Amino acid sequence: AGLIIKEAGTTKWSIFNDGDGSDKLLFEDDGDIRMVLQQDGNVGIGETSPDEMLHITSATSWKPVFKLENTNADAGGAKIQFYSTNTASPADGDYMGLIDFFGVDSNNNSTRYAYIAARAADISADTEDGRIDFQTFVGGTETITMVLNAGKLGIGTESPDEPLHIETPSSGG
Image (tube, rainbow, N blue to C red; front, side, top):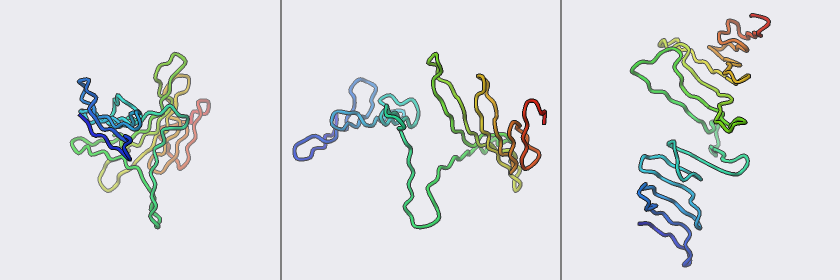
């Protein structure tokens, strides 16, 4: 079953069930599948078998691009909001959001090369502190490269005790 949208007798869009038992809803333009909606709620754009809630795939360099544009004539711009609603057991160190940077290694294994993590450093009401961890992999080992913790910047340390705290393996602090 499906819906066909035509212009001057020419099919422009088709929306249909794939009919193979997987019950995917496919959105097709000129014979190319542009988007898929699965029964589990996963959506694929450029991806016919999405394995996450939103799975966007492109075979073009520097694509896909996730673009947020605000055209309002004020000082407020577009934003991305990560919101954790763990009210059952919030704790210091909880992750609020994470941006992962994955690629493949020389054996074609999926590998995380870096990530940026936002965490709750102190959840005490009225004195909350946050932190952002910048982590990279050095010699195959996950390494916290830089931390912004409660207004203090640590390079080479997870626990900066000054506004700027730089630690190297040879300096010991």
